[in-house]
Length: 213
Image 1 (tube, one colour):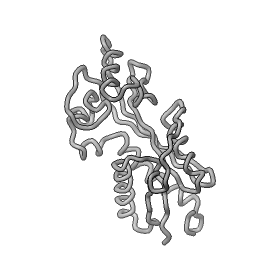
Image 2 (cartoon, one colour):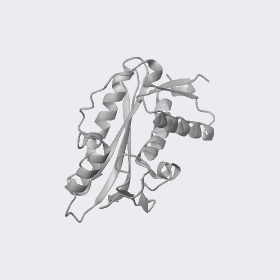
Image 3 (cartoon, helix red, strand yellow):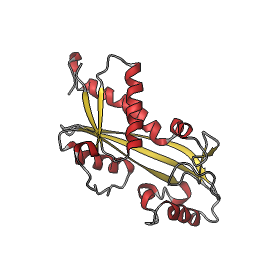
């Protein structure tokens, strides 16, 4: 059975590790499926910036995946962020650059924008996109629900994690151990859903049991 090479558009090795583990777990449960070799942007010598000018997480994920699928790879990419109900879904796709000054300033801006608001409901959202060399594409999205606290709790994680109180864990992501967070996080959910959808799409491309791609 031929190995299938996939390019994950990221320079984040922790993200690559998570995707590799999820693919491996899925393959172990479905031994008839073709094995996956997962590369990252660094593995193919790409270190450039990709302009993420989409209006949604799905659009940004597709922009990144298309940028490298043009090199002949099956490319996958994700985009994620925080959506707060009282702010009309902000910071949304601007989550990482909300203040323009990094995580600490982003959190302070979020607290300032929510000052005096009773509705603190929020969710982390992640979209994963896949683009095949022939232009075929699909996206999968997932979220995890919670609320924004008025004070910081915990020093783990990154971004808005010390302020995001997870409904699933009954603690902030800043207080959660990495394994706890991975089990309920938006990225973990989206990655697991993506792997299943990816193999489904491969089967559609391989009629009569012939080797896909």
